[in-house]
Image (cartoon, rainbow, N blue to C red; front, top):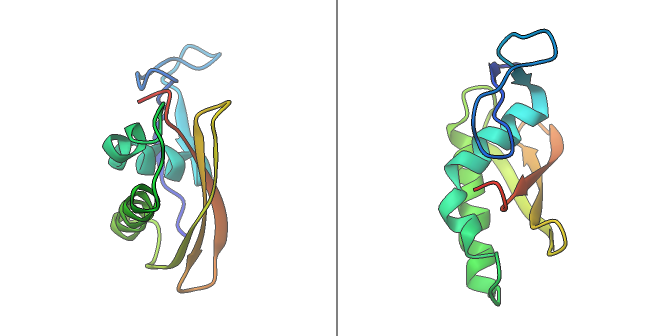
Length: 113
């Protein structure tokens, strides 16, 4: 997995400054979470304040797979598993396994969208 650095977006999806007064940056899993959250934000809205259906989960899982597969730092996703949706924090968790057997978990906050 190649590491990409990107501008870090805050909880309002705005750029912000780090403690040194420079533009805040993100990389690694945090950057992947941010990138995927931007790509699937419309589908994430279906999870907030509504009865989530199996179709909603399937659609979101497929959108996450597409976003992972479109990410230049990752190879193709072999498996995308929906783990949980935490209603307290409005966060959807997914486990991603790539075709090169890299496995990681991402958490996508719906309240920032």
